[in-house]
Image 1 (cartoon, rainbow, N blue to C red):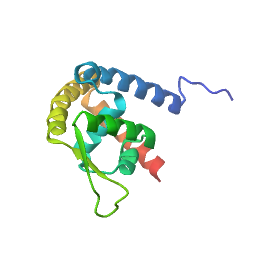
Image 2: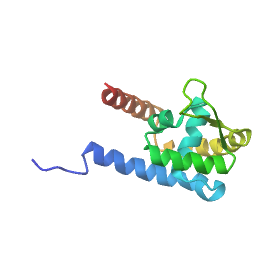
Image 3: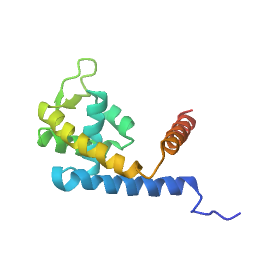
Image 4: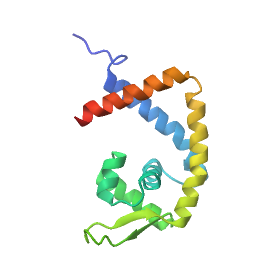
Length: 143
């Protein structure tokens, strides 16, 4: 049996994910001076609220050093702030600053428009099927 990369799911998903991520990065890299990991940390904090670095690694599927560098850069840009975690003094709680919330809101508008443009080639039914398949694959991997 020969492996066909054109139909091998891990290969196809990696390629499409990379292409989508790189294309979307054009929305925020030049205009907002963010790289991909910084965007992902910013977006996760906006979506889920305060978090520690360990949880961000899980939420964003990124390794510890990548999250750490992204957080450091976002703190230096005054987009993220940290406070002492009363429950675990070793793990600071990270959250968007006021400036970070405003910053994210601006990017979110452009992100939604970018996504609409990408998905404009799909019918509503195709979009539903895509989401269902992604959810099923996630559930299988989390089992």
